[in-house]
Length: 302
Image (cartoon, rainbow, N blue to C red):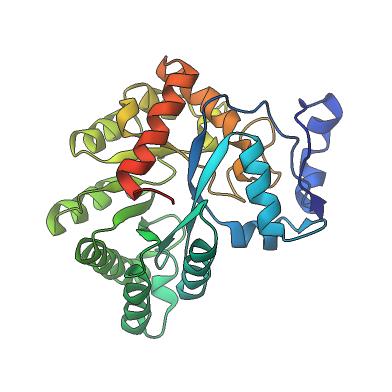
């Protein structure tokens, strides 16, 4: 269990030694230096963050997470659903909080487990019609966690989500794990919606170029800070800022040097600085561009 951090401070040697231990304890990292120009978190799971990271302290834990983000220069959040219940929860949260918009979907690894996929998709479509639901996702393909026996259900669900996004004029948010070619195949065959976001972009520069050519937005997470992520930084370097986003996927994918500890939107400044370095772009300029991309893709938050 852990409190949200209240003041910026850097990692100490003892912080680094305690990384594995504090993952078990759910201890959040210290807050980084705030951004001077605000950006938004294009993909977070506030419900999972309070469950898995164990947010404690006085008051509402969601308010604490949003408040910590605001202090770091993260002024808006996209809350993303992974099943019917989390999608409904996010849509309800967006209705009562002007800093939050919602995306609704069945996660690719959820689809093969459902006894009635059609009914779940009907419920997702009903949620997609709500005005503060601005995205359909995360949907897509995942060949890492789902075996061959579940691939047909994944693809059926993905195609259905594409149709829902187009019918309701919402952005499509894609989960793509070890499935780059198949994701493009399905999008090309179905006809992509006007606005497509590759959540937690994980491809190389060649795949990035294919996505950019199609007009898609590439959203980079804390993985871009990992020492092993040279190819991902090369992908960021060839992505035009006008097609770039930043995200946490909180409580997962915490940026270096805090890997293994719970992630939250207030840590985005670490990822933003890595993105600015990788793309050779002034930090404030990149923040302003990414912020404008959020309005372009999802519309105004308030």
